Every structure is written in structure tokens, then in C-alpha cells.
Image 1: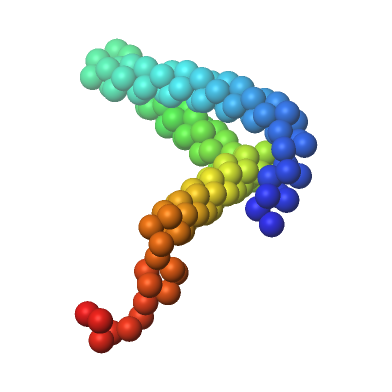
Image 2: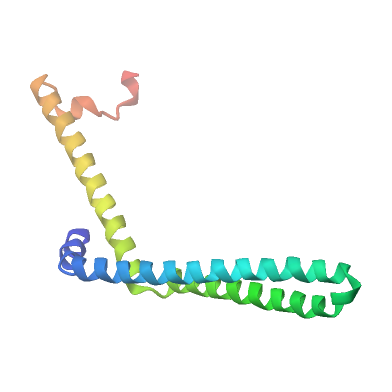
Amino acid sequence: RAKLLLVFTSNYADDIAAALETTTTRSNKIGAGSSATGIVSGVAGVVGCGALLFPPVAAVGVPLLITSLVFGGGATAAQTGEAARAKYFSEPNKLAEKMVALHGMVLSLLRITEVLAYGLLKNQREGKSSQDVGGDDLTKR
């Protein structure tokens, strides 16, 4: 079953890779925009606090603090929404993760098969039968 799924998904590997690159580019742009908005929010907050300390410009401080909160909340919401979309609603991500998991599972099964085959061949060379090697007779112990 795993091999069939890997063969099927390998036909679309180029399309999946292109979709993942597009998604990554979009996420990077959203992340950069959110970071810039977060910086603006921080600057507005610092200026607003500073303005509150000086009576001549104190009236500007409160709107700047509110602006800081709005920008900060907007940046956080954009980043959180993008992260949730990428994790839960992105089909290329889900398919790529499934491909990697199936590949790892098939490799593990092949390694186990190789180890078992090597053990059986080694026992055959030494002249032991499979009953002698793994006997369940408790009286021999």
C-alpha cells in the first residue's frame, strides 16, 4: 500500500514542489510584512509613551498607543492566520508530509527485511536450523 501511494504521488512530485515553493514565498512575504508592521507598532508605542511624559504633546500619546495596539494586533493576526492556513489547510503540505512519512516507513521495512535475511543466511551458513535458533523450549535454559 505504501509503495502504491509513493508511486502515485511521485507522478505529481514536481507539481507539489512548485506549490510548496509558491506557498513558502507567500508565507515569507506575509512574515516580512507582519514583522515590519510589528516594528511600526513598537515605534508608535515608544513614541506614544514618550509623548505622555511631555505635557505639551501629551494629547498625541494616547492615539499613538492605540495605533500601536492596532498595528501589533493586526500583525499578530496576519502571522497566526498564515501559520494556521499553512498547517491545517494546505493540501501540498499535507501530501508532502505524507510522502516523507511513507518513504521513511518503506525504508525502515526494507532495512528490517535486510537484517532478517542476513541473519537467516548467517544461520544457514553455520548449519543451524531456524528451530534451533529461536526455540521456545524453557527446559533448555
